Amino acid sequence: MQEWVPNFVGGAVPRSDCGDREYYCSTMLAFFKPWRTGKDLKSEDQSWDDAFTTHMFNARQLEIMKYFNVRYECLDARDDYAAQMKKVIM
Image 1 (spheres, rainbow, N blue to C red):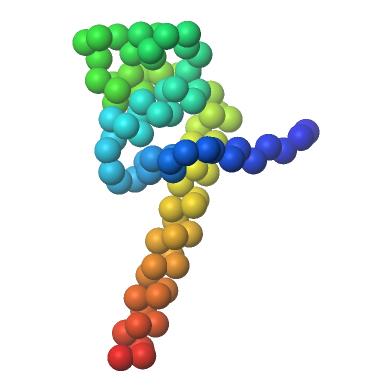
Image 2: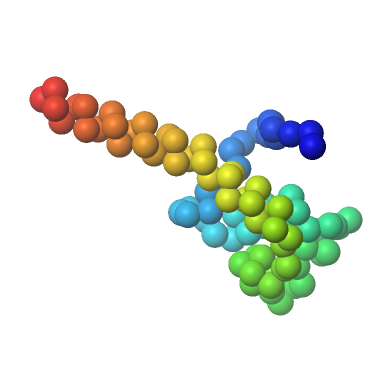
C-alpha cells in the first residue's frame, strides 16, 4: 500500500475541536463527499453541521479527519510547554 501525505496549499485545515463548526463541516464535506456543484454538498434548508452529521463517511475518511487535528494538538502542546517554562523562569 502506498502512503500519501497531503500538502494543502493556502490556509490551514479548520479545527474539529474549536472554532467555526459550519466552516469545518463544509470543508470536510468538500474533501470527502462526491460533488460537481456546491448544491450537491447540502440542501438549501440544511445547515452544514446537519449535512455533515447525516453524511455516511467511510472508515478511512473518518480516520483521515481524525488525523487532521494532530497538527493543532502538537502546536497546543508546544504552547503549553512554553507557558510552563515561562512560569519556571519567572
